Amino acid sequence: MKKGQRQVTIALMRNEIEYDAQSILSVIADTLPGEETAHVKHIYNDICEGENARRTIRFADTAFAVLAEHLHGYTATPIGGDIATDDIAHTPDVYTLAMQMDGDTSSSQVALVKTLAHDYVVLAIVCGWLALIGSDRLDYYYSMRDTALAGAVKAADSHNRIGRVTPFFGNT
Image (tube, rainbow, N blue to C red; front, side, top):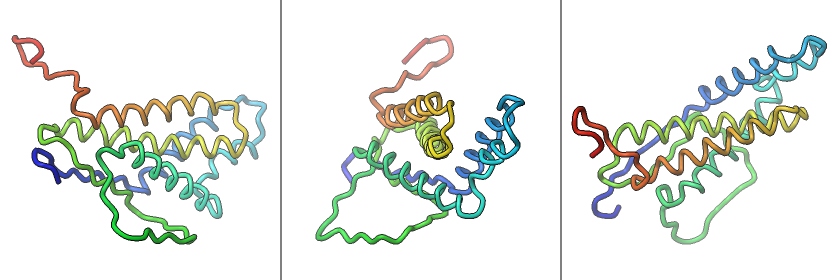
């Protein structure tokens, strides 16, 4: 670790991510026009059940990998030697980001990165599911997903801070 930096670990719980994605899709199902069949509404709610749970995990795994790559400047660690990979699906209960951040990073900044990272993974799952079922709401959720990712990257950079506001003295 470089001088003046500290390690911050952000844990994203898979069960919370899946719950939030399922909640969003349930709301979408509830707001479908009345003429939609019960079967179509069920498809929206079926995200984490049976074989669909594997798809959800795949969407989450991919989103987490993309997130870590976008936060490359904070999450990258040197790898020596060969990189071994396999074709086995890994299903972690916790997605962990170990980040090297500036020493003056605030707890509110870390909380914002965590919240936006969580939102990004949730929205990536929602987008994957909406793409599978051919929803007309996909573009809106793509936009929300991309905004959450950009926000997480921006929040991780301590040079992008708005500044602290102190009473009676204005911005510092």
